[in-house]
Length: 153
Image 1 (cartoon, one colour):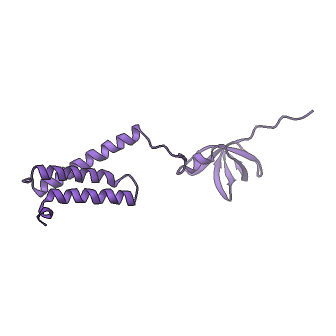
Image 2: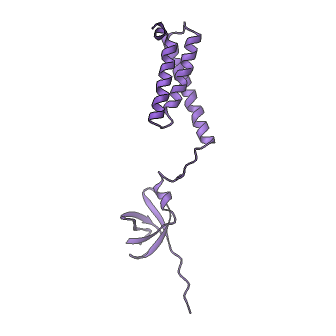
């Protein structure tokens, strides 16, 4: 097996193994290193006199280039998802109606969201008042009172 003595072939095998690992454990991360290993392997096959240090520097440079190109690609062509707010809990709550469980006084209080409670910021509201979530930051929800229902004559 003389072909295993060639560092270019070893780089290509590393690229294939990284690509397979990316398929088994998806995360769109190892694919960039797989591309860099494949390019390094091709260069090592074309230039067999290239030293191991040169190959490692080339791999590092191609890895950086692949990551930067991939980052730009995903910024310009984002992957569509059926649930874009999956990891943004506050954004998922915007528009929900919740109940004040600790009076909002001086702009601070607590509201019940599902089976939990969250710190809340907003205009003063008594315990039991219904409010709508408008946003949030720093671990607290921003709320506003619900509009008053029109009275019937």
